[in-house]
Image (cartoon, rainbow, N blue to C red):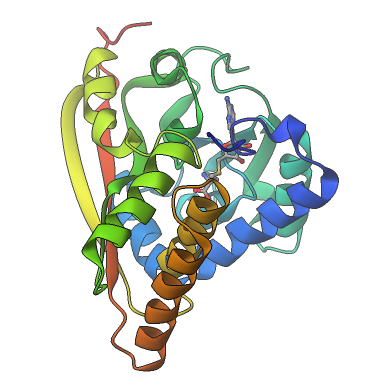
Length: 278
Ligand SMILES: C[S@@+](CC[C@H](N)C(=O)[O-])C[C@H]1O[C@@H](n2cnc3c(N)ncnc32)[C@H](O)[C@@H]1O
Protein backbone atom coordinates (compact mmCIF):
# COMPACT_ATOMS: atom_id res chain seq x y z
CA UNK A 1 0.00 0.00 0.00
CA UNK A 2 1.25 3.48 -0.86
CA UNK A 3 0.32 6.36 1.41
CA UNK A 4 -1.24 9.58 0.06
CA UNK A 5 1.42 12.26 -0.07
CA UNK A 6 0.01 15.68 0.81
CA UNK A 7 3.29 17.35 -0.17
CA UNK A 8 2.80 16.21 -3.75
CA UNK A 9 -0.88 17.22 -3.84
CA UNK A 10 -1.47 19.95 -1.26
CA UNK A 11 -4.74 20.81 -3.02
CA UNK A 12 -6.15 17.54 -1.61
CA UNK A 13 -5.32 18.61 1.95
CA UNK A 14 -7.86 20.23 4.27
CA UNK A 15 -7.22 23.68 5.77
CA UNK A 16 -6.36 22.03 9.06
CA UNK A 17 -3.90 19.67 7.38
CA UNK A 18 -2.28 22.62 5.56
CA UNK A 19 -1.93 24.50 8.88
CA UNK A 20 -0.29 21.40 10.41
CA UNK A 21 2.00 20.98 7.40
CA UNK A 22 3.11 24.62 7.74
CA UNK A 23 3.74 24.40 11.48
CA UNK A 24 5.58 21.09 10.89
CA UNK A 25 7.88 22.84 8.40
CA UNK A 26 8.52 25.66 10.89
CA UNK A 27 9.24 23.17 13.68
CA UNK A 28 11.58 21.25 11.38
CA UNK A 29 13.32 24.51 10.48
CA UNK A 30 14.14 24.99 14.18
CA UNK A 31 15.28 21.38 14.85
CA UNK A 32 19.03 21.18 15.59
CA UNK A 33 19.75 18.55 12.90
CA UNK A 34 17.87 20.56 10.26
CA UNK A 35 19.63 23.81 11.22
CA UNK A 36 22.86 21.99 10.34
CA UNK A 37 21.45 20.78 7.00
CA UNK A 38 20.00 24.18 6.08
CA UNK A 39 23.18 25.94 7.03
CA UNK A 40 25.19 23.60 4.74
CA UNK A 41 22.68 24.31 1.99
CA UNK A 42 23.14 28.07 2.43
CA UNK A 43 26.93 27.65 2.30
CA UNK A 44 26.58 25.94 -1.08
CA UNK A 45 24.11 28.49 -2.46
CA UNK A 46 26.20 31.32 -0.94
CA UNK A 47 23.59 34.11 -1.31
CA UNK A 48 25.26 37.54 -1.55
CA UNK A 49 24.00 41.12 -1.18
CA UNK A 50 22.07 42.18 -4.28
CA UNK A 51 21.30 38.63 -5.53
CA UNK A 52 17.91 37.83 -7.07
CA UNK A 53 17.13 34.28 -5.92
CA UNK A 54 14.21 31.91 -6.44
CA UNK A 55 13.07 29.09 -4.20
CA UNK A 56 10.56 26.67 -5.75
CA UNK A 57 8.46 24.57 -3.38
CA UNK A 58 9.12 27.09 -0.62
CA UNK A 59 6.39 25.82 1.75
CA UNK A 60 6.11 28.04 4.82
CA UNK A 61 9.14 30.08 3.75
CA UNK A 62 11.83 28.95 6.24
CA UNK A 63 14.62 29.14 3.63
CA UNK A 64 13.30 32.30 1.96
CA UNK A 65 13.49 34.15 5.29
CA UNK A 66 17.01 32.77 5.82
CA UNK A 67 18.16 33.94 2.34
CA UNK A 68 16.54 37.39 2.72
CA UNK A 69 19.07 38.59 5.26
CA UNK A 70 21.95 37.53 3.01
CA UNK A 71 20.76 39.40 -0.11
CA UNK A 72 19.73 42.60 1.74
CA UNK A 73 19.48 45.50 1.21
CA UNK A 74 19.12 45.50 -2.60
CA UNK A 75 18.54 41.85 -3.44
CA UNK A 76 15.25 40.03 -3.91
CA UNK A 77 13.96 36.61 -2.89
CA UNK A 78 11.04 35.00 -4.68
CA UNK A 79 9.28 32.11 -2.95
CA UNK A 80 7.04 30.00 -5.17
CA UNK A 81 4.75 27.16 -4.10
CA UNK A 82 1.94 25.20 -5.73
CA UNK A 83 -0.28 25.73 -2.67
CA UNK A 84 -1.96 29.15 -2.38
CA UNK A 85 -2.74 28.40 1.28
CA UNK A 86 0.93 27.71 2.08
CA UNK A 87 1.94 30.90 0.24
CA UNK A 88 -0.59 32.83 2.38
CA UNK A 89 0.87 31.31 5.55
CA UNK A 90 4.45 32.00 4.37
CA UNK A 91 3.53 35.65 3.77
CA UNK A 92 2.05 35.87 7.28
CA UNK A 93 5.13 34.29 8.89
CA UNK A 94 7.40 36.74 7.07
CA UNK A 95 5.24 39.80 7.70
CA UNK A 96 6.76 40.41 11.13
CA UNK A 97 10.31 39.98 9.86
CA UNK A 98 12.42 43.08 9.34
CA UNK A 99 13.34 41.85 5.86
CA UNK A 100 9.80 41.01 4.74
CA UNK A 101 9.90 43.57 1.90
CA UNK A 102 12.75 41.68 0.24
CA UNK A 103 10.62 38.55 -0.28
CA UNK A 104 7.99 38.21 -3.01
CA UNK A 105 5.51 35.33 -2.72
CA UNK A 106 4.03 33.60 -5.69
CA UNK A 107 1.61 30.71 -6.21
CA UNK A 108 2.57 28.55 -9.17
CA UNK A 109 3.75 25.19 -10.48
CA UNK A 110 7.47 24.58 -10.67
CA UNK A 111 6.83 22.83 -14.01
CA UNK A 112 5.64 26.11 -15.61
CA UNK A 113 7.34 29.04 -13.89
CA UNK A 114 5.63 32.41 -14.39
CA UNK A 115 8.94 34.27 -14.94
CA UNK A 116 10.79 35.43 -18.06
CA UNK A 117 14.15 34.09 -19.28
CA UNK A 118 17.15 34.87 -17.02
CA UNK A 119 15.14 36.60 -14.26
CA UNK A 120 17.27 35.24 -11.40
CA UNK A 121 20.92 34.97 -10.35
CA UNK A 122 20.27 31.59 -8.74
CA UNK A 123 17.59 29.10 -7.77
CA UNK A 124 16.97 26.51 -5.09
CA UNK A 125 14.78 23.40 -4.80
CA UNK A 126 15.05 21.88 -1.32
CA UNK A 127 13.04 18.82 -0.23
CA UNK A 128 10.89 19.22 -3.35
CA UNK A 129 12.05 16.74 -5.98
CA UNK A 130 11.09 13.72 -3.88
CA UNK A 131 7.49 14.90 -4.18
CA UNK A 132 7.28 15.54 -7.93
CA UNK A 133 6.93 13.15 -10.86
CA UNK A 134 8.81 15.27 -13.41
CA UNK A 135 12.07 16.70 -12.03
CA UNK A 136 13.51 16.98 -15.56
CA UNK A 137 10.79 19.40 -16.66
CA UNK A 138 11.34 21.44 -13.51
CA UNK A 139 15.11 21.61 -14.06
CA UNK A 140 14.58 22.87 -17.61
CA UNK A 141 12.32 25.56 -16.21
CA UNK A 142 14.91 26.53 -13.60
CA UNK A 143 17.61 26.67 -16.27
CA UNK A 144 15.37 28.96 -18.31
CA UNK A 145 14.70 31.48 -15.52
CA UNK A 146 18.29 31.58 -14.15
CA UNK A 147 20.78 33.76 -16.02
CA UNK A 148 23.83 32.16 -17.74
CA UNK A 149 26.48 31.61 -15.06
CA UNK A 150 23.83 31.52 -12.31
CA UNK A 151 23.65 28.69 -9.77
CA UNK A 152 21.05 25.95 -9.49
CA UNK A 153 21.00 24.10 -6.17
CA UNK A 154 18.87 21.04 -5.42
CA UNK A 155 18.72 19.01 -2.22
CA UNK A 156 16.93 15.90 -0.99
CA UNK A 157 17.51 13.22 1.57
CA UNK A 158 17.94 9.57 0.63
CA UNK A 159 15.96 7.53 3.11
CA UNK A 160 17.81 4.29 2.29
CA UNK A 161 20.89 5.87 3.89
CA UNK A 162 19.29 5.94 7.36
CA UNK A 163 21.36 4.28 10.07
CA UNK A 164 19.78 3.59 13.46
CA UNK A 165 21.48 1.97 16.43
CA UNK A 166 18.93 -0.71 17.40
CA UNK A 167 19.39 -4.26 18.72
CA UNK A 168 16.97 -5.80 16.18
CA UNK A 169 18.59 -5.48 12.74
CA UNK A 170 15.99 -7.46 10.84
CA UNK A 171 13.05 -5.47 12.25
CA UNK A 172 14.91 -2.18 11.81
CA UNK A 173 15.46 -2.97 8.13
CA UNK A 174 11.79 -3.83 7.70
CA UNK A 175 10.65 -0.55 9.33
CA UNK A 176 13.07 1.57 7.29
CA UNK A 177 12.43 -0.20 3.99
CA UNK A 178 8.69 0.06 4.41
CA UNK A 179 8.97 3.79 5.15
CA UNK A 180 11.38 4.29 2.26
CA UNK A 181 9.28 2.49 -0.32
CA UNK A 182 5.71 3.36 0.66
CA UNK A 183 5.53 6.72 2.38
CA UNK A 184 6.30 10.36 1.64
CA UNK A 185 7.28 10.34 -2.04
CA UNK A 186 10.39 9.17 -3.86
CA UNK A 187 12.80 8.53 -1.00
CA UNK A 188 15.64 7.70 -3.40
CA UNK A 189 15.48 11.21 -4.81
CA UNK A 190 18.76 12.25 -3.16
CA UNK A 191 20.90 9.79 -5.15
CA UNK A 192 19.11 10.70 -8.40
CA UNK A 193 19.76 14.45 -8.30
CA UNK A 194 23.22 14.20 -9.89
CA UNK A 195 21.90 12.34 -12.94
CA UNK A 196 18.99 14.76 -13.28
CA UNK A 197 21.24 17.84 -13.09
CA UNK A 198 23.67 16.29 -15.62
CA UNK A 199 20.78 15.49 -18.01
CA UNK A 200 19.60 19.09 -17.80
CA UNK A 201 22.91 20.20 -19.32
CA UNK A 202 24.14 22.08 -16.24
CA UNK A 203 27.88 22.64 -15.96
CA UNK A 204 30.46 22.64 -13.13
CA UNK A 205 28.42 20.05 -11.21
CA UNK A 206 29.39 19.37 -7.61
CA UNK A 207 27.80 17.19 -4.96
CA UNK A 208 27.96 17.97 -1.26
CA UNK A 209 26.76 15.06 0.91
CA UNK A 210 25.60 16.04 4.39
CA UNK A 211 25.44 13.38 7.09
CA UNK A 212 22.79 14.60 9.46
CA UNK A 213 22.96 13.05 12.92
CA UNK A 214 20.08 12.77 15.40
CA UNK A 215 20.79 12.12 19.06
CA UNK A 216 18.01 14.09 20.75
CA UNK A 217 14.24 14.05 20.91
CA UNK A 218 14.05 17.47 19.25
CA UNK A 219 16.03 16.36 16.18
CA UNK A 220 13.78 16.07 13.17
CA UNK A 221 15.06 12.62 12.18
CA UNK A 222 14.06 11.27 15.62
CA UNK A 223 10.47 12.23 14.91
CA UNK A 224 10.70 10.77 11.38
CA UNK A 225 11.74 7.41 12.83
CA UNK A 226 8.79 7.23 15.21
CA UNK A 227 6.59 8.18 12.27
CA UNK A 228 8.26 5.46 10.16
CA UNK A 229 7.32 2.84 12.74
CA UNK A 230 3.76 4.16 12.87
CA UNK A 231 3.21 4.15 9.09
CA UNK A 232 4.90 0.73 8.72
CA UNK A 233 2.51 -0.65 11.34
CA UNK A 234 -0.55 1.06 9.84
CA UNK A 235 0.41 -0.13 6.35
CA UNK A 236 0.95 -3.74 7.44
CA UNK A 237 4.76 -3.72 7.09
CA UNK A 238 5.22 -4.67 10.77
CA UNK A 239 2.88 -5.92 13.48
CA UNK A 240 1.62 -3.83 16.40
CA UNK A 241 3.79 -5.69 18.87
CA UNK A 242 6.84 -5.24 16.61
CA UNK A 243 6.02 -1.52 16.46
CA UNK A 244 5.79 -1.23 20.24
CA UNK A 245 9.02 -3.15 20.85
CA UNK A 246 10.97 -1.17 18.22
CA UNK A 247 9.74 2.19 19.50
CA UNK A 248 10.22 1.26 23.16
CA UNK A 249 13.92 0.55 22.62
CA UNK A 250 14.41 3.90 20.88
CA UNK A 251 12.59 5.73 23.69
CA UNK A 252 14.79 4.02 26.28
CA UNK A 253 17.87 5.01 24.28
CA UNK A 254 16.68 8.63 24.25
CA UNK A 255 16.21 8.56 28.00
CA UNK A 256 19.66 7.00 28.44
CA UNK A 257 21.12 9.58 26.00
CA UNK A 258 22.48 6.74 23.88
CA UNK A 259 20.12 7.23 20.93
CA UNK A 260 21.90 7.49 17.58
CA UNK A 261 20.57 7.78 14.05
CA UNK A 262 21.75 9.43 10.85
CA UNK A 263 20.67 10.16 7.28
CA UNK A 264 22.46 11.53 4.22
CA UNK A 265 21.19 14.60 2.37
CA UNK A 266 22.65 15.21 -1.09
CA UNK A 267 23.09 18.80 -2.24
CA UNK A 268 23.90 19.10 -5.96
CA UNK A 269 24.95 22.43 -7.41
CA UNK A 270 25.43 23.32 -11.06
CA UNK A 271 25.80 26.36 -13.25
CA UNK A 272 23.42 27.45 -15.96
CA UNK A 273 25.71 27.54 -18.99
CA UNK A 274 24.49 29.06 -22.25
CA UNK A 275 24.19 25.48 -23.61
CA UNK A 276 21.86 24.30 -20.81
CA UNK A 277 18.73 22.64 -22.24
CA UNK A 278 15.95 25.22 -22.47
C1 LIG B 1 8.46 19.32 1.95
S1 LIG B 1 7.99 20.92 1.44
C2 LIG B 1 9.58 21.75 1.40
C3 LIG B 1 9.49 23.20 1.85
C4 LIG B 1 10.80 23.98 1.83
N1 LIG B 1 11.48 23.89 0.58
C5 LIG B 1 11.72 23.54 2.94
O1 LIG B 1 12.75 22.92 2.67
O2 LIG B 1 11.38 23.82 4.11
C6 LIG B 1 7.65 20.73 -0.30
C7 LIG B 1 6.87 21.90 -0.88
O3 LIG B 1 6.78 21.76 -2.29
C8 LIG B 1 5.49 22.19 -2.72
N2 LIG B 1 5.23 21.58 -4.04
C9 LIG B 1 4.94 20.28 -4.32
N3 LIG B 1 4.82 20.10 -5.65
C10 LIG B 1 5.07 21.31 -6.23
C11 LIG B 1 5.12 21.78 -7.58
N4 LIG B 1 4.87 20.94 -8.60
N5 LIG B 1 5.39 23.07 -7.81
C12 LIG B 1 5.62 23.94 -6.78
N6 LIG B 1 5.60 23.55 -5.48
C13 LIG B 1 5.33 22.26 -5.20
C14 LIG B 1 4.56 21.73 -1.61
O4 LIG B 1 3.36 22.47 -1.60
C15 LIG B 1 5.43 21.98 -0.37
O5 LIG B 1 5.20 23.26 0.16
